[in-house]
Amino acid sequence: MKQIISLSINGKQFEDAVSDNMLLIDYLRNTRGLTGTKTGCDGGECGACTVIIDGQARPSCITLASTCHGASIETIEGQARNGILTPLQQAFHENLGTQCGFCTPGMILTAEALLRHNPDPSEDEIKQALGGNLCRCTGYVKIIKSVRTAAEANP
Image 1 (cartoon, rainbow, N blue to C red):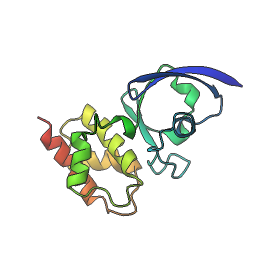
Image 2 (cartoon, rainbow, N blue to C red; image 1 turned 120 degrees about the vertical axis):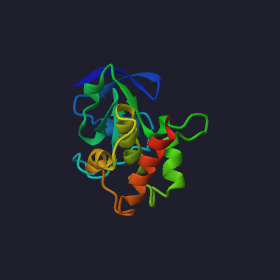
Image 3 (spheres, one colour; image 1 turned 135 degrees about the vertical axis):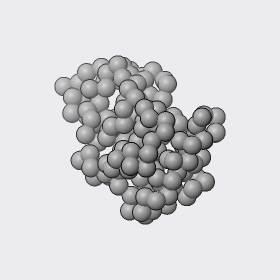
Image 4 (cartoon, one colour; image 1 turned 180 degrees about the vertical axis):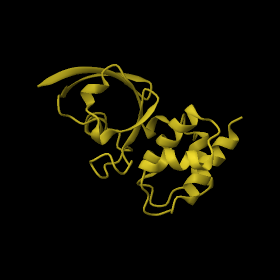
């Protein structure tokens, strides 16, 4: 079966027919062409597919698109404005918080949701928030430093 969903993605309104079993990641990537959201584990365990839904970081690979009717969704494509990186994206760039970049969209969106709720997190709070995001390249030190740098830059 299909149903019509209406939702906001990166500040723009959309209305689409989706099947009851369509995952949000497939909707974002295949229907909306937002390929910054990465498919990793397909089980909600790696964080590569993380998006912000109504202010909360959530894995899109285990979220049904139909459950997002009326929601506000943010993807990595909606973070920078007019080519200007957000303070968090800039901090990742300056602190070498990315290596291959595969996990970076999920890391940034998870960290963004954290900083919105807790603008001055401790290192332990950052580690806890990023606990569901896996990186095979950096060892997390530069990622944690990037989040701290962004938090310190935000008065």
